[in-house]
Image (cartoon, rainbow, N blue to C red; front, side, top):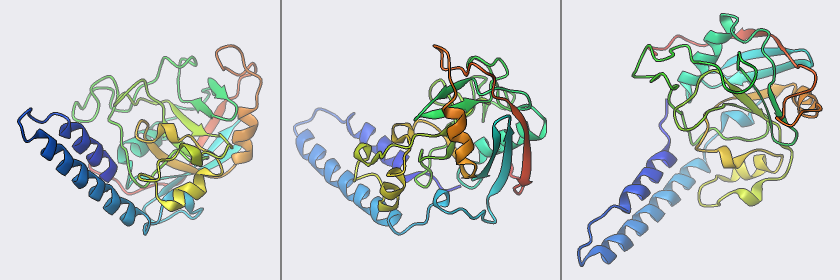
Length: 257
């Protein structure tokens, strides 16, 4: 898995603010800012030459694919184990074991996202396949976020829902927003191809905070249909929308995690 350059840069910026209070602190700060600016520029130059798996409808050799069969229609999604191996393994294992069968889309907000994966059906439940059994992956509160410079909350993105950093369990969401979001993007952080993608909608505020691990390739009309469902005051559809099954169309090679 490629590590996120952006995550490292954020850590660098955070640590830079903890320097000593010597008489040379101003010079040190100026030097750090120049280094950070240079690193950001180099990162963006690299990403502007890169390909982003979400932007291709094809399923690559290193990707998996599932069909989410709902009471409102089918949604085909490709998954990215190279960039989010924990989230993909968690999702596919749950799917194979029938964990998601019969669960509802318990939170639906039109022009934002649709959310499911909670056995309790109210947003308070769900657990990972590890559930604290492997402390190196899941502390019992959930498994670690996987942030990548190559995956974003564009329209159609599949991502893990969480209650804060590293609290991923079984709940997931699909980004449905159709509004042009390029006004929310920092040109120093986002490559050119993502500006084009975010013109079609998305949730850039989620970038860096939630693990994106898949992308809808067919069935966004079904996602829109679900998002447009009448809901109550807690954003739960008045008529249950159910996951009837998840079919594994293409599995992925086994990993050591």
